[in-house]
Amino acid sequence: DISLGMLSKIENGITSPSLTTLQALSRALGVPVTAFFRRFEEERSAVFVRAGEGLDVERRGTRAGHQYNLLGHIGSNTSGVVVEPYLITLTEDSDVFPTFQHEGMEFLYMLEGEVVYRHGSNLYPMKPGDSLFFDADAPHGPEVLTVLPMRYLSIICYPQGSAG
Image (tube, rainbow, N blue to C red; front, side):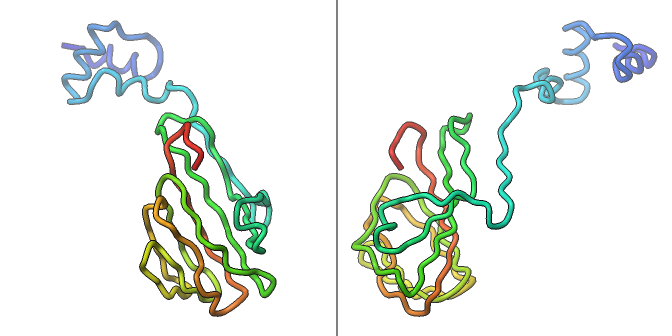
């Protein structure tokens, strides 16, 4: 048992508890001993990108006039997954691209314009507010550019160490 005085000293940082004391506290609180150390883990990454300040990057659709704006990127991380959020813009100068195919999953969210989007043998007419989540290993991409300009959020996720 731990006295209230000892508990107060631990809470206020006046004394450091022994491992035995930590075990008693963890049992009393119903949490693992490691719960006491979570604040002291290594720092986790975060990326903040202001409006309009994403990184313009080239991808396979660039030559068809697709503009890719990378909205953030965290490389190696503890999840084992790479996530790439893009704001993709197509204008009157854009053209459809045969199809894309890559490892992982992809999520699309239409912001502006209209498109008929292909995934495998299925066609999805998409308008602002519509979303599509799919296995990116199937052939996919804009099939018919219905209303331009068009903007959509594309979030691609794939295992670390693969090409994405």
